[in-house]
Length: 80
Image (cartoon, rainbow, N blue to C red; front, side):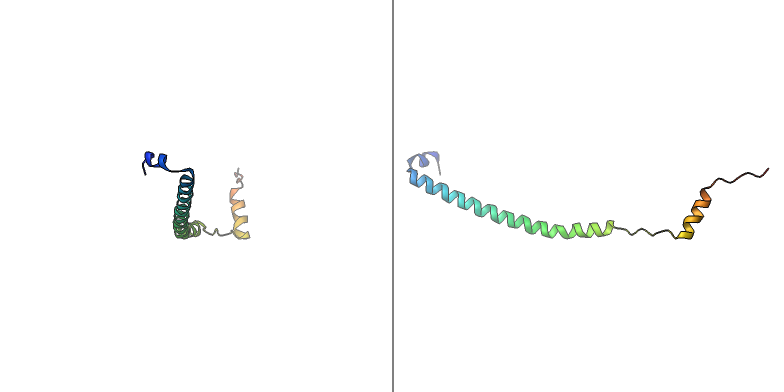
């Protein structure tokens, strides 16, 4: 619609046009939001897989191993 056409419309017609345009815009925004949310849902499965692969369990050292490691760190006295 050209600007000249808008100049010919009455206030009521312009208000109706504005309402119609607002409604149509809201419909398009809602449809796009639904598309984006569906895409995020698809992508979230990869996030879950990535987090699982990053979580590597760490083995705990046994008490005997800890004592051996402590002894290995102590300085050894030299024999004369």
